[in-house]
Length: 622
Image (cartoon, rainbow, N blue to C red; front, side):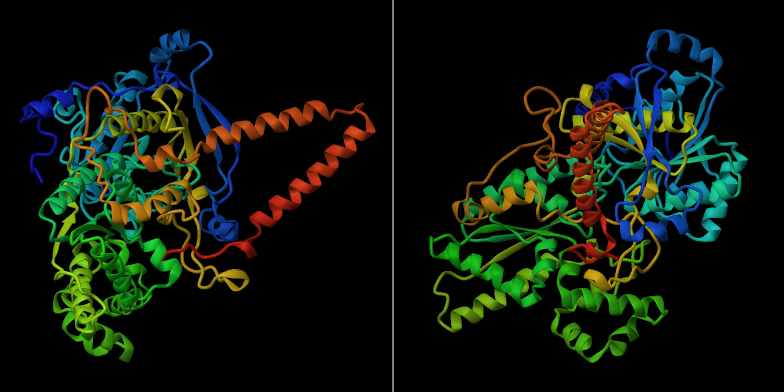
């Protein structure tokens, strides 16, 4: 990480220089210095069963209204008068999540929007992430500072650190900094955990009568911050494109040599979004998704047998090579491995020395621990991440699977069940290779737009909100810009499925697993047999910044119907039509038909949203 954060330096290579010249696009509503904030209905939570718990934990920010940003009726006149009428705004921005391509464009968009709002506005970046926020270590963001970071990868403009604003001491330090800098707004850039922390900080600042408004921006390469308001995160598109190129290279190498199975583990934390998108882009032979394993409750050896069956099916076609994708969260979706990791986590939390943890495991966990190869044992004992989860990026799941698959294939050979050539494997972890990449056009545009929205949220006095954009699969000029309350994205996890489920823990924004009923997963299932046997590898190549393909978007984004804001507008239109038709003086038959229809609709919606029908997600999340 560069120690001289924000120091303007010459862009090193011609590609970086050319990338810096790209001007991100804005939807019409953000093209002027003034926008119109339209307030919708009060929001509830994504999970009705946890609504009461969320309301109790966030009494001052729960139930806030959804806000849509639109162009003013008289944009030219409003902009001309605005600069002279509006006071300058003081805003701070912090990178709280892991580095993700496009993060710098959030800062750029925020800076440009601030300058257009009032040229005397000030933007501070906190150096070194949240630790810089706590210590009030700042860098004033200017045109000169931004010059070398526009459309560039990494988070090296400001850097990042522990990725949390959680303890009372941390929250107090953040509030002190906001007060000392006289900030009107604080923009927190990050993923699931960072935005949960942003919600808590916003609640506390309101409680303490601190004027600083706290807003979140969805930036995460994992793509797991998905809900009714967030269609995808900044960085996901770039990371998937870069990884897909690497995977396609491996596929071509595998088919050329004809004798190796490549086990490729991909970043993405607990959900399999990156792995699914990369599979749809590059067409590897197999993808073992954590959500599938969790749903079917497959044991470790059942996963191994599933892979071996695929190897054997390919051998029958005289194929002794292949490519297998593995999400880094797979190991936690295997029931016995998840339970083992939980036991180790509890012992860590009880401050048991690492060397003593194996001796304090329960008998079954100790037996499983001893069964695992030594390198996996060492990795499972590593200290936890800042969100108290296992260090998934440090656990070589691909090597574990390759090791066990090889053992099983040797066993099948000895038993006469497999008569093909010797199984050989090569392992890769594609993690850090992609997250520092130059961002795609989509991520450049998306991040820049979110930066603009962040400013308008602060100017509107919103706190405890996330900047959101809907209708992302369409061209930029059709994007819908909005602000959604962070509490509307929260839920409370439960112990069991069904009517006996008991809410536990604090309300939070949780990672969203793959929707196993969604169109993207359905497409994968349709192609699974062909992927396994046909070797119809796809080579997407490197990210295209110009020409055909430069505006391509994630397959998993474009295939789904996710325009939540558009659906809300459609619902409003139909409700208005009903009000227009059923007015006092309408016929009795019309009135009876309306009442009957409303009773039916109300009954269906009540059943769908009743807490007793809400179950645990299909995936284990802390």
